[in-house]
Length: 323
View 1 (spheres, rainbow, N blue to C red):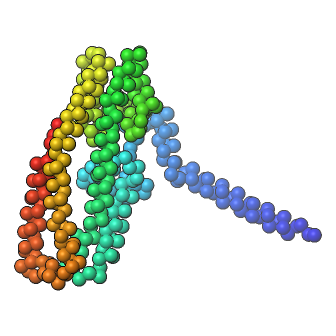
View 2 (view 1 turned 90 degrees about the vertical axis):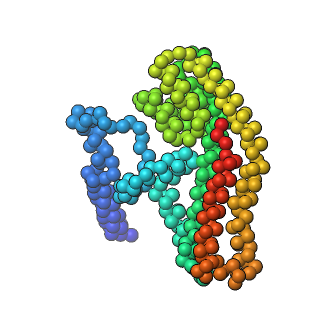
């Protein structure tokens, strides 16, 4: 068998593959993703780059795509929506979240396109799935905050015992981060990592309140910041704060039980008009459709909807108590 031709083919293929791989590595070393980062680090080492204004806090990206990132940064107050995602415990990019919202809206428009409704009725029906998803995320965010607040008194007691045993404040954060329960474990672990990386303690604690929208956790941060500035027995402060938070949660639970009837009535009165409208649409569409097909019906619908919003807002303000 003549092996000359197969050998030439294999060598040619190998040579081409090695050439392409070398060309790719050469291109990646000069114009690749990490090329600029390597250049900046080298400039830092040789002292040609000022690092006074560089933050050591890891920035949260809004998108994987740099152009989308720059576009989103130009939108006013877009960081509030990103903060909402962080407080809900979601690791997705803001661009991914917005894409999912747009996809739900388009699916809603496609689902209701055949109905003979006015354009604004179709718009409301199309945006309804997006609102439902936002409400579910907000409920998940509130549940996460309640879980953290329920774990906070025991966490403060654990930190107080650790500091009483001789550990520093940062070491007490590490103990909570390793021995605590989620979700508070991950938040304190992140705070410890930031302090251990070189970030100031007050900045790391402010970042903690930014990630968790909890009033009780802010009490803890304020108490620690005051102690860092004025001095004192931090162990005793943590124990007193844990008892105060327990008493506050006990009172809040009592108020929640006593106001359960009012909140149930508010839910029923808020949802009843929409449920009756849907039921009447199924039973007698010709009659109920006059509300959005006739001029008088449209005016009546606008007035009723405005009064309903005022009534719903007033009811929920009456059954919501600040402790």
